[in-house]
Each structure stands twice: as C-alpha cells, then as structure tokens.
Image 1 (cartoon, rainbow, N blue to C red):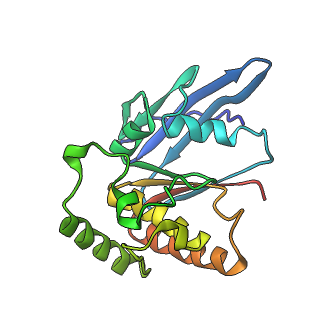
Image 2 (spheres, rainbow, N blue to C red):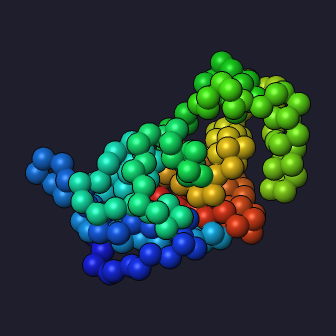
Length: 207
C-alpha cells in the first residue's frame, strides 16, 4: 500500500499519517502512506490479502510501529505503543475475529481491557450503555453471555465497547466477512448513525 501525496498538519484531523512506511523481510507492506482522518468521515481501505491493509491497521491500533514517517493524533506526533494506548487516544478497533470472551456476559466484556481504577460502577455502565444504544437505535442484552449472541449482535457489542471508551475513530476490519446479508444491512445502518454522531470510520475490506 502506497501513497505519494503530501499532507500539512491540521488539528482538525483526529489522526493523520505522513509518509508512513513499514517493511518486513522481503516486502514493503506500506510505502510512504499519507492519510488524514477527520470527524464524520468514512475511509474504505480496499485490497486483496497481502495488500498491506492489516499492517496499516496494526500501526493505528498500536500493534506495530512504522519504520519511517509519523502518526499524528490531534495534530501532535504520537507513538501509539499498544492497543490500550490507542483506546486512550480515542482509536477503537473491531477486528475480523471477535475479541470477546464467550463465557462472560456482555457487561463483563465491556469492562475488559481498561485499568481497574477507571472501570465504571455497574449503574454508571448501564446508564452509559443506555445512552449509546438509544442514540444508535440498537438493543444490547447486558446480562446475556456472549456465547448466546449471534455474530451480528457480538459485533454490536465490540462497537459498543469502543463507544463506551469514548472512541472518536472506529476501525472495522473485514467486518462483513462473517455476517449474513441481513447482518450486513444492519451494520451499514449502524455505521451511518455513528457517522451522524461525528465518529470517523475506517472500513477495511477485500471485496
């Protein structure tokens, strides 16, 4: 994946990539990529397997570091050092393979991953979830085990987890690959509502 354009720093950008390059032995996965992401925008990364999509997402979500170039968050050069750090910066990722614990309830999954001292009380979580689900027009069963949910419902929980953490940029990695046609339609409607709320979305797909 490559880009030759040049971007100037703009503090309206949630995240900006400038000349980002990532190499692996024998291959350049990302070659001087420039990308600016602002609130309410949807960016689609389209490409076959091996095109460098996952590598780019890995750098935005703190799983990998660029070899060259820089990533700016709110106009400031930032090293995103871990998925937890990415979340703290407002970057949430829903990976192709669900990261939920099936034996736990939805509420318990929503609390995973953050520092224990920042975890909201049960009533605070319920109030926050009620607010988000009302805005997005979805229904979530907080006390159901994840194993009891459909794939589409599990995906909604992943998105909700990012929203509970106040994500401003949501990365959806191959999010339609395992959904039914109805699930794909529901995801599309949910994405539109997220964008209406000012969230930025990066949608990764190979088709």
